[in-house]
Length: 367
Image 1 (cartoon, rainbow, N blue to C red):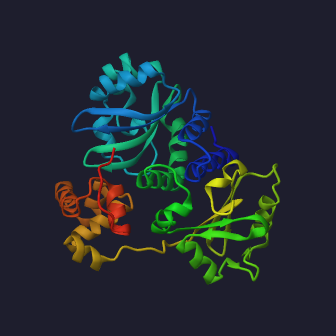
Image 2: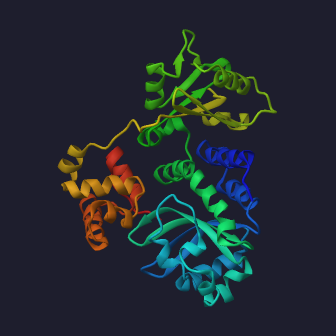
Image 3: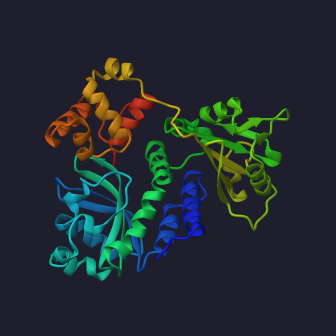
């Protein structure tokens, strides 16, 4: 089964709706379930060390199933330890963790999982010393290679889901971009422009302002309106501002190597933004603009050169295995250095590391 571009765009649209306060996680999960055979999806955490876990948000699973997982079946989840070793932000099929034939022999499958499906897909969103926060969907039918199309879809959605997860965890809930000052977007190298009627610039993050000042693909006109250099992209923006209901609410164009995502904001949520902007423009340059200063990491946290390299890898989502291979060191050595990083910074999760490095905020407990 192939996933159409229209379906993919709808999922991306729902993700940005989360960030801009126009949708909920349930909307996104429902859209994902609609394309997966017998799909049921959950956002959940699992702690391999404590053999415990629970669903945070789920769609398709009944309440009894969710309670049973938290009270007992999380402790015997045969995928539990393997999930901690899966790379961040890369979709996987269940068979990447455990052969299906072995999975079917487990109590977890026979007394629990088979009620909702034969197998599953997932992706790790956050991890911290064996504790993971995942998105996972059950699948009723299909062989591993048939289902990999859905795992690959999660990988393709990963950059967008990353923004939603970072935004919600760091902001402790959806807030308008004006309240966040665009820091989270800037920190991951993404600029945002909020555009109102007639193309007037309503607000911008720092990187959005930099993109306007560079004039490479868009600039600010004399009347304060945003002008895009590419005729096709400019036409799409104008159509969105003209309130043409038949057009897609989310469109993506590339202008001079810069990716622009245009998102039509629903009028019902206009009060969430300065001067009721009508279109958001997400600006992604090929290379992130913001970088972590190694000098600050050494002076502020006392990290060694090796620990700084690992910290950069952790923030970029590199797994322990990949870090070990890249550094030509054992997994145990890398794990020891990771523990040292968390101890020196006081962070409890990768998101806290992210905030500490970029925003110099004090850590707080996660989940």
